[in-house]
Figure 1 (tube, rainbow, N blue to C red):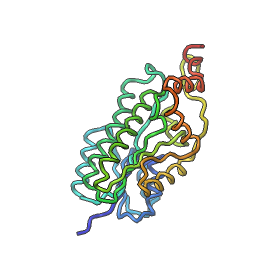
Figure 2: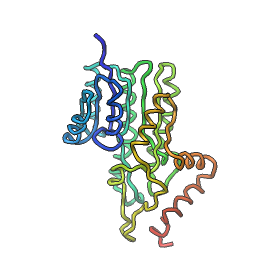
Figure 3: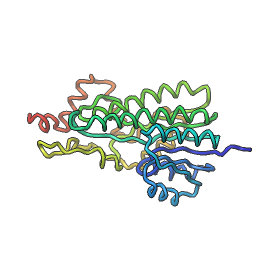
Figure 4: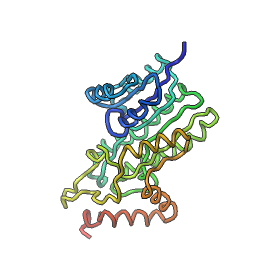
Length: 267
């Protein structure tokens, strides 16, 4: 019996994950599996797709939920042709403004869950398979007041690029997508107002990209088996720039751009 050809997308209930489901809908899969939060939102995604959509309404930081996904793979034994890891979140603010539980949850979702999803799914992928990991331009340098988020994305970039090399012999490619500021619900959870100054921690956005354009380029680059996908001149320029100047300068530029010393130290 021929195995079902499927795509697996995390964070499928909204934002970039949902957009990926919509774009992959036309790629001829037998089924798309979506993992995300909110039964109502997932039902809405299901109704919007032509491809059969199997969803898992679950929190990927819960180990019991990860076991459910692993069991589903074992039972279905599909041919996973695409794995797209979109689940993740960020928090803006100083270390003592963000509950340590939130920061740990960020590490769990952005890093541990991504690693689990990737390495649990690879055994069900064959030559020609594609893995797409959503990282961020924030992962290329330390960013004060977005410290933990930036660090988690640095992990995603390093892990995914190395894994791409390891999987070449299997004919599976890993494309690391590094968006710049992008118009998604990310900011609803990430934004924070400094309690002393009543000002947003991050208030200056050099550019704000359209998520659909970011994702269309990501899919195009994954089809070409590119190692990295970075949409936009500003985003690509920043990545090149931070490789050329000292990290201390990079952090100083960020602090001045966002006026963070004034916001936190009154300087």
